[in-house]
Amino acid sequence: MMDNDAAASADAATDAALALDRLQISEEVASVDAVVEEESPASPSTPLALSEDYKPDTSAPIILCDAFYGFPTQKRPRNERVRAVSRQLTNFLQWRSETSEKNSNNYHSHVHVLGFTEDVESVKTRVDELGAQTKASSEEIVFHPGIGIHQFLDQQKDASSSTQESSEEVVYLSPDADYTLSTTCRPPRVVIIGMLIDRRITEDRSRRRAEESLNIRAAKLPLDELGVQDLSSCEPLNVDTVMELIQRWWWNCDKLEQRSQQINNGSGNSEDSNTEKYSRLYKKCFFEAAALALKSHRDRHPNRTVHKTN
Image 1 (cartoon, rainbow, N blue to C red):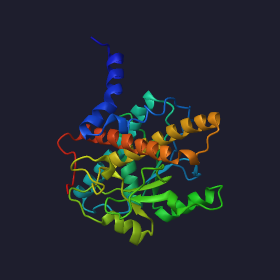
Image 2: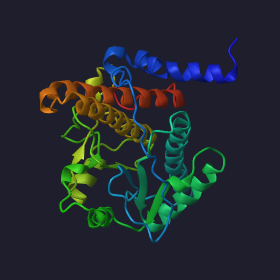
Image 3: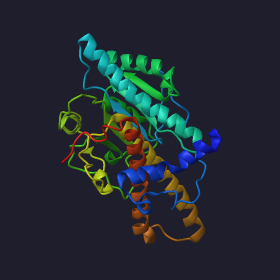
């Protein structure tokens, strides 16, 4: 019989296989580790604390949580919304904390919550309470009460050392978007996720918020490429699932790029000559990230794996 450490190691080793089996994705397509044999050390970013003196780190990827959809004003519905949003954020933080314990080389994206002042402050208070019960720490989230989306993005641009920041580096995720993120390259550096946690789905809400209210490009996740029955790119995934998927996707792309750089520096081959190869490897980065994020969702909600079927 295995001891606890050996059992935990065995469970971790089979996570990907279980995810691929459940999602009907072949291991040949989804395993990034099978292609990227070694991992170069990456410096973990220091968690950001809430501070008026906050200065943006313009090199780290950002998950921007948009809570400007507004919370109910009546006490009971409002408390339910605060608890629901806080639980989704805490689920992500707890997963990331547990994953980082297994692999200290994974750096953390920066997570920011923006919204109306009272709403953001209520969510922060609840996340603090949940954090005391779990491994989640609200210090890994920067809460910005009353700070608008474009105000935040302008602050990022002002702090950037580059003279021009491409709009391609900012995307608002929406299952109703016309545009789909590519699997043949890394995802944008700034990903905005709407804090839409409702019992009933209102279609097209996040797309209209992005493109009509904010004039920001909306995009959906390329879930169609997974080839999973009853799961399409139009599926409105849970907030914690989307956050985990994006974080894993960034991690996988970094691992691939670090390893590829080592190989290219040693071989002298140009990247242009390997365009097709790298496109295929980038796809693996997304496939594995999606498989494992969806497995986490199924572990949390075994009887509710999808919200919408075509």
